[in-house]
Length: 273
Length: 298
Image (cartoon, rainbow over the protein chains, first blue to last red):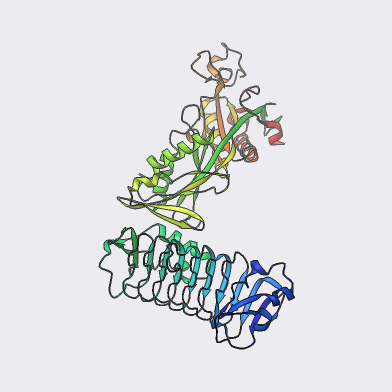
């Protein structure tokens, strides 16, 4: 069976909510039923058949082709299978994700991996603000799984994050790990201002020392921490360079904070040795 | 039956069900991993008075351990789940948490889960940090040499304890030499431990005693100095008997260990003073697992 491909017939001016197009909701549906599914497009309802050219038969593997940047809620709440977006994706990619894999070959907009629980998301280019965060007003952000971003990320990444790992290979915006409750954020590039703002617990693992360290984090000195090789080894189940960086993080400077809050979070800065 | 000139008694070893877990201790180097493991498995020869039976299963290469440091695999056996959990926690807290550079991991993920570092974390007095890695929770407990890393839980499985065989020799030194040969061969096997000192017991016991307070006492039938005083099982030339006790994760593991051990002991032959191999047969009073020597060597 080949993957079911959804190719946009014409670029949409409106946002398209593709949350009904997940493996969980397509299994045991025949081709006509899939074409007949209705999607929210702006403030209107349109059928899948009106919007997409559809081909393929494997509901466990879905692909979105065409001008995909208007597609919101890709893989929302899915528990199994794989979704590939050949291009950019809109907001809320992998929101409430509970399993399976989402691969976006381009960039994604805000709130990707929002409140996700498990599974893996690969973003080959950049991610917007509030990656791995929670919806406005909620207090439980990402609570499990992996997010791998090859490019840069926006502001407030990991806001209210509770568990899981966000692994960023590029730079990060401001307020990385803000209000973080637990979990791990790894960053290979530069970080913005107000790192770990109001962070309660959790770990920010930074390959580069920021130009300005937050004043509400206290220096705990340099250390060799036994859990880091174990943590990095745990990343080997996803495709990330962090899995092979035990040597880089063999010596770390530990900062604890945010002392304006609970103060049990930590920033671990790789130290040249 | 005769194996390499050594008489094999037509009897069986009697073993009983236990609960077991495997724990991995790592440290900065093999020396300190060994120290932690030896400390944790100390005073754990017999459930009769130690609460559990524990031993080193094998040394582990850094490539095999969870944190990439040299390690030791330990097996702990007890008569019940609650006792095992208590023993594991107590020993981990007093012997591994305290040992410089050590870390503690589960070596057995299947079965019922019992606490490993779950309660040890409170030693951190609120500064402890939890990390969930690959669906398993670990605790980082700040200690004076850095951090003590321990896995929250370990798996507990049904196991078998008390597999055994006796080596009957002309002289004490000969019996010991045969035991050493057997232990050396058996140490290479997975899933088993020989919990007594050096793997060898010189004070094999029988079930019961003339004293009401004791539920085990000396196995007088195999005591060479009592040959004329009791219903002895020893022929006149036997001057020393030593026992090897084996705990294993399965009955098959014990069978295999007994086979390897008996063959290694018998390989010395009667010229080395090894005359007979027997086993602790308690007439069905001890447990449901019967390991017939002749079947094991067949």
